[in-house]
Amino acid sequence: MMRNTSCLLPVVSFLISTSCLGQNENIDLTGVIDMHVHAGPDSRPRAMNDWEAVQMAENAGLRGVLLKNHFTMTADRAALAAQLVDSLLVFGGVALNRSVGGINPEAVRQMAAFSGGRGKVVWLPTFDSQFFITKEGITDPFVPVMKDGKPVKGLLEVFSLIAKNNLVLAMGHSSPQEVLALIPFARAEGVENILITHVFGQDASFSQIQQMAATGAIMELDWLAAYTDPLILNDYVEVIQSVGAESFIISSDFGQEGNPDHASGMRAFIAALRSREISQQQIDLMAKQNPAKLLGLD
Ligand SMILES: [Zn+2]
Image (cartoon, helix red, strand yellow):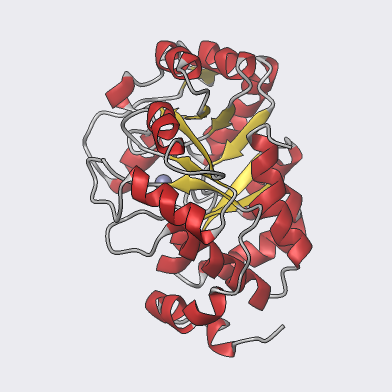
């Protein structure tokens, strides 16, 4: 494989995105599923809407996308957007932030029951999580997930609905301590698929990442973080090589106004990993097999 050494260096993000773009177009996205796709309508500025996002993803050859919104359910939007494309798989979910009532089992029950069957992921609070609000120094109210070392009221019911409907429990912006404390409770309710949302964005230590892997949870590595801070790629490569690709997925987390489209993000991510000696087999596990497994696909 031809290697473009300019892609290897921890240069500013726009250099990665532009200098490798031509080369990245050769990267085949067959089978690749991006489980972190933001698009409008949204209360945050987005680069495209759901329709544009799925059409771009299909044209780029992705196998599937999972639409994520922090404030409203996307199972319905995914069902509508799926009608615009031929082969692309389109999924959605619900994030348990204040706009849906926080830890609200009814929000999960309805999402799972919506026609189209596109609702697959339940995120614990993201922008309304205690960890995020505290870390950002914001004074807004937050949605706690634990009280006195136990899951808050309603959370066990959420876990049991996730299990019953074979959904994915995504840990949102919970702290690594909360993630590790909650996983046994989720397992006890029968939750099989656990996804730890952008694990490095949550400041997990290497030892916590090892403990998370030992629970059988899958951890997310997102391109947005590496696009913003290329040095984080070093951490990604280290955990993939030492913990094992079987414990990770890679996603774009793109959709922000001004950023490239999701497929370009996935291509740039794959190119960056290849340039750092991550094998195609490892990439396939993280970009294809693990997302398919979480989503209950063959
Ligand atoms: Zn996101």
